[in-house]
Length: 146
Image (cartoon, rainbow, N blue to C red; front, side, top):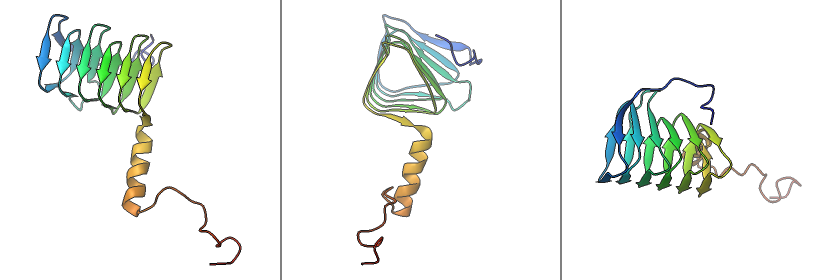
């Protein structure tokens, strides 16, 4: 799959192999390649070139908060990606996927909601203003009756 014009990302500084099973939260900086299993949150650094790569053998049982994500494995939890998300053919997400840019291959699955990052900001502004997003006039206001 093309990675959005081959943008350069952090070098992969950490590799979690297929025989590794981690229980607990995992925090990383730069790049992480996951072939194993993580039971807990996976949180990446805020650098714009930070990336999490999950292979077809990789599984995350918990929420993911990263800048960029290439997923060909499984995530059972919500995914928050402030940058780009690439879902390869064997990618499986069970939960809500929050993204800014999304590329999804045929065969990839998201069993939950897809929420564009701009939508998150709009929802928060509406809640702060006490609005429900419904711009229709109140009943009777259009015909002069109140």
